Image (cartoon, rainbow, N blue to C red):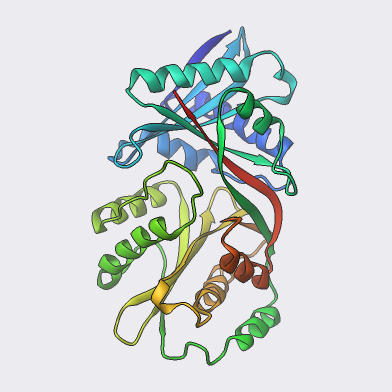
Length: 332
């Protein structure tokens, strides 16, 4: 068994790498999520100042047994490497996962990093899976748990109208603004700050993770990367009477992966809570998303199990839980 390094330069090689990862997800998950091939390759070939991505493949002769995806954060969390390991169902119990884990750990140590972090999907009720058993046996510790929730689209306009009627009059003093791929210049300072607040507010359990610090320049770089990936984004924000960006939500997906859509961040600033602003931004944002949807799709989202208010908002919207996503860490 040996390791092949994947950098995304060779298109055919990367397509095989991505297909292996996607095949495992489709085999193991009822509602697989994740980047399409073109989206993923951009992350490998770009040279951003906040993230570097690389791949490893365990091979035996001509057989690709499994893969590892490594995220190297370059501004925050420079003490760790995030790693995902996937082994083809026909090649399990041959030591490939352990081989890939040791290869990832060796690279992390050589770069002066002191921790590996990984995310694993498991049963909705217990959170357990073959992946969690593997992680526990290799010295990883469970640090945080989220619910993976899904919602089949499109949603009928009448249902959206009914949801909107339930919250009518509770936040009329707020103005809604919407944008697509580029944050308007007039809101970019406040939106970058709101993204930073989101990183500080979102529950992360006992994870040893630093929140991302957003600036207008970093936001523009992220937008440029998203466009290069072929991704699209719908943003709705609520503006308070004093001009403060009080709440926002984002949904989107990728042109090359039409069956998978995502509910990304939703934030209501603490001082503006209690006015149903979560639903107040999600409903019009979903209308915007669906206005361009001409096929069935699954909208995915994740919430910390302790984030009861946002889980309740998503339940009212129509999301249902299908799995647990558990986050694990190992000190090297």
